[in-house]
Length: 290
Image (cartoon, rainbow, N blue to C red):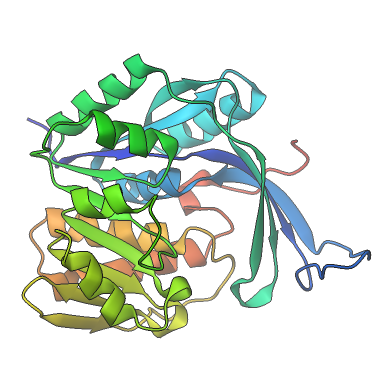
């Protein structure tokens, strides 16, 4: 019997090049000098796994990883940070270039994307999810295939809908299969209404992050919750939402009520915001690597 609940996270992990700029590029030819640049682990599922592991949760990350230099670097950094990775074979490792400016501005350029996961790997991921105490199925081709291949799940499934606007067809199976959903308010002017529309399709809890304004949550019985953002010295906002979700889930796995779990989530988001990596366990900047 594991000492803590077993969690499976299915979805993206990537090797990223982050570039700091004075301002994001305008759509005209011009030149800028970067204020800084470094390489590090990226990907929404990698971020959640890093923070869950840092909180002492027994977690397994299922993510497409190529047999290439980027994949080697990605696996090495994750394993040194304490994340157990079940690598799904891919023709190449996902890689991004992120252009970042003050105030949280970001443009993500997808340089390479993973290939379609093999059927055998999808089935293995399904079995892992079915054996877990809780699973996070992130928006991705791997996540979609796992949901399609899974019979009616007994494991509670949690979904991160990111900037969901309430209408995207791709998101629909994720919403309907979820025990709980997370999102941010980038795609809506009515977060309470968006959360309610999600709960109408099956989830028992919806959480929406509001950036510097904190977060709100809505339970299926109509109970509302709000939490302020934790004060932080902002270094890099990449992965703050993933850290928030991980902090919430870790608290709920330890039987904390929703209000306390939201406060734990806000504290965990601060951990991500105050480091130049998804999690401080990844260590110092890696300069000069492709």
